[in-house]
Length: 250
Length: 259
Image 1 (cartoon, chains in turn brown, yellow):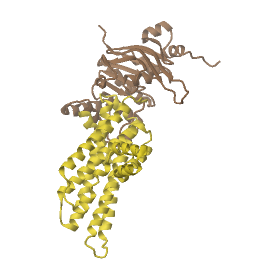
Image 2 (cartoon, each protein chain N blue to C red; image 1 turned 180 degrees about the horizontal axis):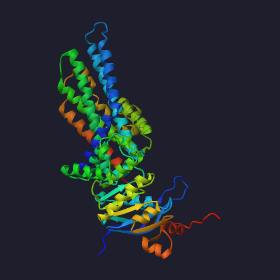
Image 3 (cartoon, chains in turn orange, green; image 1 turned 60 degrees about the horizontal axis):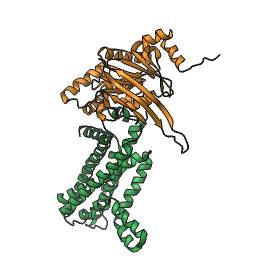
């Protein structure tokens, strides 16, 4: 039996117009999607396709206009739905007055990790993201790559069963990108479920089991990476461009 | 409550790692010590003026700390995007509001303890006495008053986007209530008619912060405030703070947060 970790049913998200007569903007339109336990799902689409809005609904930042979404069978509007997830936003900013260790301790406390286990867990994630030496430094003194790794560390502090990563490698140098990719690979081997959006299609092809391509708020294609490559007889980048209707300059 | 305490801890950490409190404390201390060093006409009663000035400075400083610290909490979380990794954890928006309130309120309490200890030391150096009972009552009521102010500013921070406009509006409301709040019913009696009724409605609906200003008891050594009045004011302040926090949660709970 396949366990469904994330279930999105007929999700519709509209944002009200900013001006009085402006029509509401439709961000997501009738999205149906399932993420199964242990798989890595790449959530793709051009800018403004509705990827981040969908993630925001899953994380409870945005309320759906209609439809439903659940994580581990719990409605996403319930805070407890987020007990077993780790989230890494596209841009990671953390409390400037805290150092990495204090930040992780704060988040570990929120997850109610017992005091004894807390320090072991902090040490383990800092080792994983290679930040042990800088654990006492204020985060504001870190480079962008290091800050992104702090983001990953905080996303892993509760040893989550589901990771939601919003463009985790955006703006990183090749070394940083490789590091993040290795971590995702390792999590996949540990049987974790990963739901991530990215514009790096080569990376998606390497890491993901399945992809879902969103365009103008609608789900256009969903399937296993291998199956899609066979079906379209081209790589993921070309499949993506075909689906969004890209016309090359003549 | 675990999440509320964890959030409050971060707020307190922020306060003591920023310079605002230290600047206000040093300014208060310097002004008081300069005033204390002056001997007008060799008058021994100068100690009352000194107490008056010191307590006024403490009230101003504590209001500045309460309003400015609270006003930036939620907007700063949104601006720096720290709210996203935070709310992506099992933290409800009600807990976020409660944690911010508790953190700011406790931080104000800690600042008050330091201020009042300084006040006590300055006074004791002149009067050679420590009237601890009235000091405790004054500090406690001051703290309860700041609880209402903190809750009011938190409500403002979910309504107004800019912390500066929220802080300005809240300062005007707080100072307006402290100066005029107690006289509105008297004015309403004189006005009569519908304007009088409206003024009465305002009088009964605003939080009466002026009740918590018991500086005269401390300055003129009037003795202790009745414990029943003290308890009543405490209860009133706690209920008012809870009401304002409930309103802040109602506004904030359905608010869309976009990354």
